Amino acid sequence: MTTPRSDGRPPLLLGAHFSIAGGRHNALYAAAGCGCTALQLFTKNARTWKETPLTRAAVARFDQARKETGITEIAAHTSYLLNIASPDDGNRARSRAALSAELERCGRLGIPYIVHHPGAHLGAGADAGVDNAAREIRRIFAALPGRNCRLLLETTAGQGTGIGRTFEEIAAILSAVDAPDRMGVCLDTCHIFAAGYDLRTREAYERTMDHFDRTIGLAQLFVLHLNDAKNDFHSRVDRHEHIGEGAIGIDAFGFVMQDPRLARCPKIIETPKTRGGTDMDRVNLDRLRALAESGGDRPSA
Ligand SMILES: [Zn+2]
Image 1: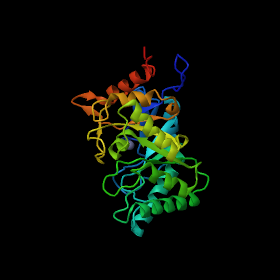
Image 2: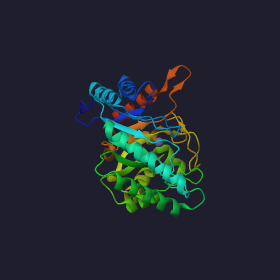
Image 3: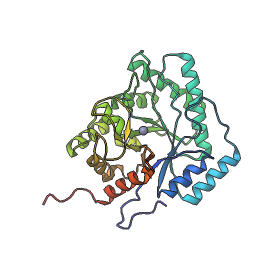
Image 4: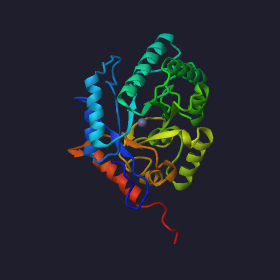
């Protein structure tokens, strides 16, 4: 349950991505089993275009699980196949229909956030990709008035022709759609580090957060993905590593966990689930809890 901590600080909103095998409600029970106060899930099989019908029974079971676990900080993640930035009309239309379906499903499930990769321009250029993505989102919103699931654009590593590598590209989409009550941003530590935003020292972290605040605005930030990076700084390669064991290192996660500006944002790990026989979600979440509890800047003596 998300009650304040004993020292009066706001509750820690911390979780992981969980599987929906056996039903979407199972993700909530798995999260509660790990002591999570937040979670991320797919609302359908993310590797296929096939739509899975959402039955009233499935919605009721999800509602029941949310009540029993007390977890309300839930983010869905869209399928990886969607590309609303594509220069191809057919590809874009198909992606628009799928993203609409994702938003509708989240609305019915009472999921407050859906995290979405802005897409890839496939050679047409970043500006064209930004324009295409913004136009598709506007069309989706126009066709689905009054839905209350917030669409969050995720910062990306900039692999291939992916857009969303720079804060400026994300800001450009947000401003072109111009629906601040229906949109926001999910910041992924691994992706921004791979994209060239450093977090490894206090100075670098503050510089990066300042840059984010000036271009996008911290008020637009709703969810964080906390992942260390397998590849070096500015690699533009999106590969997640266990917290504190990658190229970003443990200090950066301390800066994030102790940043009062980010206290209201659910923080979700997307790190490898197991190593040998060990449940690594528990290990990674414990590392983050310890950083949160270590209490911010130490006095400089
Ligand atoms: Zn992510």
